[in-house]
Image 1 (tube, rainbow, N blue to C red):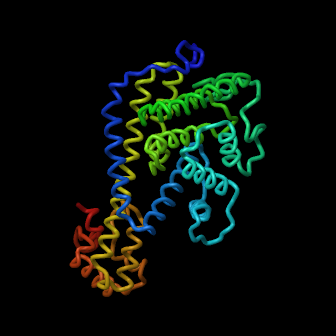
Image 2: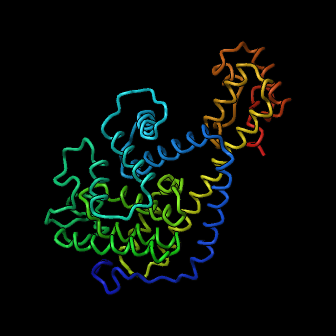
Length: 366
């Protein structure tokens, strides 16, 4: 069997662009709504959103590869790089490296791509690693670079990348295509999708290819939009990892890539919708606290802030009186009075009766 890089059409992929036109149109519409809503946030909420989205993306792109990071350390490092207040904790190498990687991606999105940028990213991602032959350089091992699963005595090869002695030449062509496609203004989703499958097919590094490939797609999206995209692509991919790996396996066998581009475009759109929900959630928070300014006691304010910290999905199963007592240390009678008052003020919606009573932020229950 021949892999895509062994076939005619490698590097000059074919696809049915009419299939992608409505998806491209929807992408531009939805991102326009996000950026419009984003301007209504306070500077504090914008900073909070940036930290949340960047850290979530770092966490999820790592988890896709089986690496689990500490959220608090990661956010502290990101806040430091953004010039925000931090808790000055000691940051482990893995969290420090990917935080700097994400900030570089976020702040330097419009820079042309070159080998040096990719090597810098790789060094940051491999920060603290001592088990690799090549860090900050393309792979040089003459052994085949394969994606395999199954038993050692009977492995299943899902993909084999070009041999190491071809990698530099392949990356020369990839980088030239990436930079030229920006000038040619290839549609955003199409360019980001080709970027990811093209880079993953070369698989130029000993490790970290998935994380860098997803970052390159985000760089492509940001360049198309003319600003950092704030799109949680890795978080959406993480949600359906099996489908992601299946789509990558399929596109590695063919240079007609319409199916891959449709899958990738829809994944990006799902991620855009997630950002839209998060921005809308923060706007609702601001509106609620403005409306109730001076009307809340310290316990009620603390509880509402805790509910908002839980994010758009809220507390699983809703807030109970027991949760309220745990958060505020109030007595049961006080908790009941506080919660009923929040319902009367339109901050919470009450669902159920007696022990089954649960409370939701008023806009989450609709």
